[in-house]
Structure formats: C-alpha cells, structure tokens
Figure 1 (tube, rainbow, N blue to C red):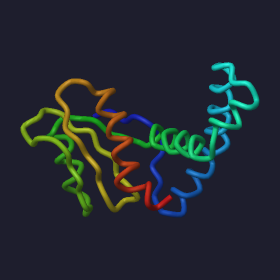
Figure 2 (figure 1 turned 135 degrees about the vertical axis):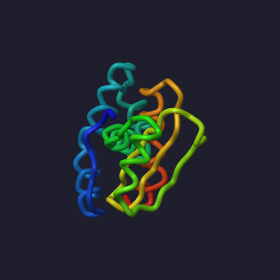
Figure 3 (figure 1 turned 90 degrees about the vertical axis):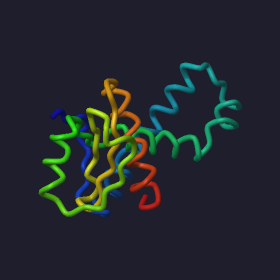
Figure 4 (figure 1 turned 120 degrees about the vertical axis):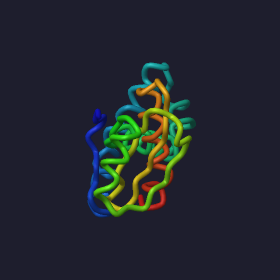
Length: 136
C-alpha cells in the first residue's frame, strides 16, 4: 500500500482552514502563470478573474489530498475496520484501488489496473467534487 499527498482534514473546520490557507498560493500561481504568458496589465485584469483564482485554489487543494493505493485486498482490509459511507467508482474485478478517507466519514475510491499516478490525480479531483466542493 502506498500513500500520496498529505492533506487529510479530519473535520469540516480543518478542511475550511486548509482550503483558506492554499488561497494565497493559488493566487501567486495564477499571477506567475499570467506573467509567464506575457499578459499586459489590461489583459491580466480582463482574464484573471476571481473565478480563475478560485479554480486554481480548488485544483491545488484537491492535488494535496491524501490518497492511498493498493490491491483490492489491502483496500478491503483497510475498509473492514472503519464505519464509513463508501463511494466507489469502477469494477470490483480490477486489481488495484485508490481511495481517500474524507473527514473520517466518507471513503471515495476508484479502481484502476496499472496507471497509479493517473488514478491518484483522478481520485483527488473526484474526492474534491464529491465531498469538499459543497463544504468549501
């Protein structure tokens, strides 16, 4: 079993605090990206909106979420000790599972055959969309 990412909020309050904390970083990333794209001040003001920065914050927060990856057996063993709502995408017949334990209440998981990095990134976005987006 492997662990990716480092953000595993244990409460709604902690999730909100972490989300707020990545705001300045998201703003800096957007600003520096616009600078690298040679936006002049007028173009920057026109194209870099609050929605753009919020999207960057959402993506940054999601990319930091802790995801475990392992075999179906490792996932089932981990899940057996926990009382959680489970949102699982994919097939039970696939060899590997990626999962995120959201707030100690919901497990968001997805099966994958061989592309672990892609599964992690996809699951982080899914966990954000299914659990955190409405909360934050």
